[in-house]
Structures are given as C-alpha cells and as structure tokens.
Image 1 (cartoon, helix red, strand yellow):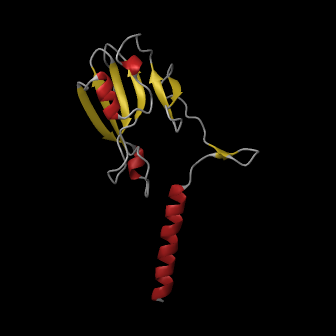
Image 2 (spheres, one colour):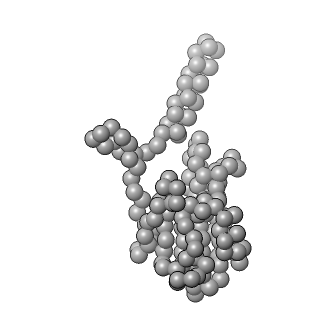
Image 3 (cartoon, rainbow, N blue to C red):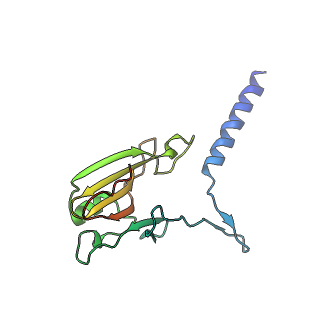
Length: 151
C-alpha cells in the first residue's frame, strides 16, 4: 500500500513539473511552435523586441533625442542601465500574479519600477520566488512630468 501511495505522489509531482515547464504557443503548419505576440498594456504603446530577441517589451511615449532614455534598449540589465544613464531617483518593488503559480520558474514573479525625474519610469523583471533571475528591462515609460507608475 505504501508503494502505491508513494508512486501516485511522485507521478503527480512529475506531472505538475512537466506542465509548468511547457511553453505556451501554437503549432504552425510546418510543425514549429510560435508564441503569441503580447498586446500593449497602454493605448499608444508600441511593442519592441528585446535586444537578444527572446521576448517583447513595451515603450510608452517617445524619448526626446539626446535624452537619457533615448540610449536604452529593451532587454538591458539594471546594471547596464545604471552604468549608462546613472542611478534612479526612486525604486518600487511589487509582486505580480505569477508569484502564486505553483512551480513557476520564470523571472517575472516580481516587478521593479525605477523613477528618473524629468524622464519617466523603467520597469524591470524582479526575479522569481526562489531568488533567481530578474533585472531585465521590459518597459520604458517616457513621462517627463511624472505619473508613470502602474502600482
């Protein structure tokens, strides 16, 4: 009896881990899997591929030529951004709904928003629930007069 219970529990765990690791997407006619393109969260925002092409980020507004935000690219790390344009004036961290997905190993269980006065806000992935990943730029919000936080 103990063997059957152990086997059932291990099978359930393996099934959950397998389901958590599946990438969502649709199969095309040639057998490859493509992921759906995300829609912008704000009207007027544009979706931009990250510099390595792994995902799409969002740019809200248009940075002024020569401004600090004009130098940025979706997919940069927080360290790269800070080195390039300086430290932010303020930071806010919050959890996303993905925080509560069992066996979620992605790097977007938290978000970190940083504020640059007279420029706007930058949103980074904040890492997973196990302390790994994070700090990839996913949204650039140009708002020189402030009011760009989505918390």
